[in-house]
Length: 153
View 1 (cartoon, helix red, strand yellow):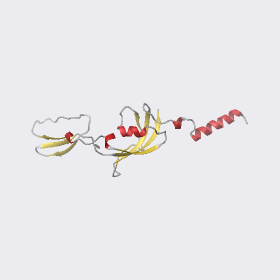
View 2 (cartoon, rainbow, N blue to C red):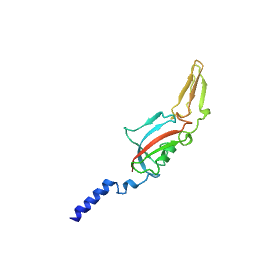
View 3 (cartoon, rainbow, N blue to C red):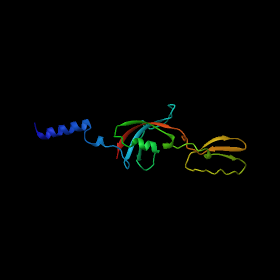
View 4 (cartoon, rainbow, N blue to C red):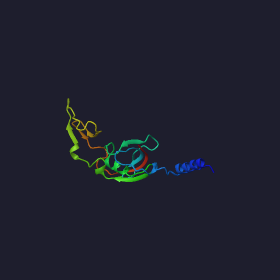
């Protein structure tokens, strides 16, 4: 048999088996990765997912996603899936009741936004006051994720 053909067959077999070394690389700090995920609360309610949509792309170590999510991706190989429970401290932190503000309402009242980039929830409003919660939506809650590493750049 011709050695060129044999070499070609061996290379094809290695590629088919995923033995090229590419699949062996694990995600590390500094890598740009793409992932698919489903996020659930402890009761099982799905709060977010990108499965069937575009992969989430981020650079590990730059704080572009919550700490616990980033930590869960480190060490994964392309194609691997991990299920992880992220405690509140490594997700959106604990609730801070100082961030729940009641403000009296009268004509001309200006409401100061404490965290302008942070979505806030109006908890209560009536004729005389408004109560706004500036805590992140999932503050104080553990989050559960199923994460599949799609690619490493």
